Structure formats: C-alpha cells, structure tokens
Image (cartoon, rainbow, N blue to C red; front, top):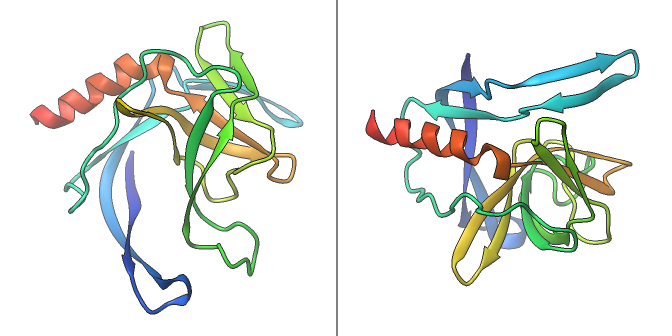
Length: 183
C-alpha cells in the first residue's frame, strides 16, 4: 500500500519556545505485519494481533541517523520508559503541533494467546495524545536506546497510553530493515 509520511526536524527559531518544526513529505510503501488481525464487535475493536506496519521510503530521510536497537527482553512492570509524540493535544493547546517526549512507568503488560504483547502506562507522568499513534517508545540506558514499543493510542481521556510491544516482533522488524539496507 502506497503511503505518504511526514517527518519533522526541529531547529532554533523566533517562534514561541524558540523551536521551529520543518515538516517534510516522503513517499513510501507500507508493509503490515503478516499476522495483523482485529476482532470487531458492535462496541468497536475488542482485540488485535500484529498491530504493526513498516514503511519503506522511496528516498532516505536526510540528516537522520538511526539511533536505536531492538530489545532483547520484554518491558517489565514499573520499568521507566521514554515515549515520543507529535500531534494535537487539545484544540488551542500551547503544545499542539510540537514534538513532545516524556517518561512514565509500565503499569500493565498484556500477552495474547499468540505470545504477542502490548503494554500501558496508567500512572501520573507523561502520556500520549491524539495524533501520536505510531510514535516510538524507548528504553534508554548506558548501552544505548532500544525501541520497545509503538504507540497505538490512548484511553480514558488521555490518562492511559497504549503501546504495541516490539519485543515479539523484533525478528520481523530486523529482517525488514536488513532487506531495506541491501536494496
């Protein structure tokens, strides 16, 4: 499926807060995980599997270095992680349209029958907002940065942030990235 991706670079400027976002559009092809399924009932989506897609861009993003690794372990309850978002927080909010990041701790881990998982933040701290879906969640430490989750939304008026865990999908993600590097 052909898609358009918007990337943002941030530079000092004369806008409030001194930061200017420079959006750029890139064309690419999205590849959903082969195990992607959803179960929908009258009240909406009730379960999912493989809620991930990778986008192979037609041209590389200029000036961006990939600076993460895939995790060797699943996230843990009470683990402190960093999430990144960009989107509307509330109409007219001062932080709408700006990149945000913050730290929170994992409060829930859910594994499906197939072993794939999701995790959530329910505690006080940073949360994702409308428009942040698809954004990354990182484990950071002395050894670097690991991509442990992809935002799949929020609930309860933005007090719960939900993520697809990348741990069980790491082989698929790494293979797709190797294929992109060799083409």
